[in-house]
Length: 261
Image 1 (tube, rainbow, N blue to C red):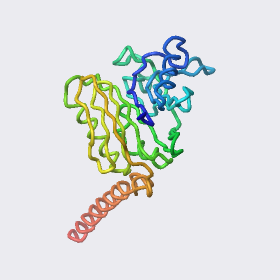
Image 2: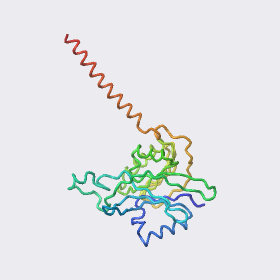
Image 3: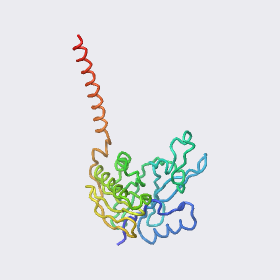
Image 4: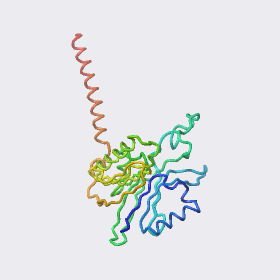
């Protein structure tokens, strides 16, 4: 049976899909032949008044091969995908020369897929690479209507270290915080499916040629407190801590004056 969605990792297509006349049509043909929606990572660009602006992008192709959505990475890797404060730090270059000077995206894109037999619609958000480690960023996709999340990443930088395991462990926390399943595709692993409870139901090893198939339960009935309000509890705790510290210092100063009298 054909899957509803095929997920390829970040940088799976190392060419400009929107402009490449050789491999671009092949991706479209692949979507048509597979009979599935295909989500994949690729560099993208837009031509603006100040020149060409590059993005770390994810495209969604329909079963008919049409582009039905795109997402531009919002939280870029500093000194990897861009140099912060470029005018001040003009003497610093990126640590990764092969990666372009990317611009941050602005839209929390919600993709839609539809099962042709049941006509059931499902909505999901996409996190590219280390975006998934930022809880407040992730929750905004679910708050905007995502029923599940997809994390596409290039973890090849980590090599055969514990970093890949740490990365997918952080994904599990995002699943729990928002009570939604997460599908993860990493070019060198670890790819897998994470349940809303945080359980990693299926996972691959690193640096192996393989794939994962499975089903996820969608249709979130109620958004979690964290999805709706974010870190408000942490903010309240921080303000309460500051208040208690100030109160404690005031009490000490008051006792000191009393003792002096």
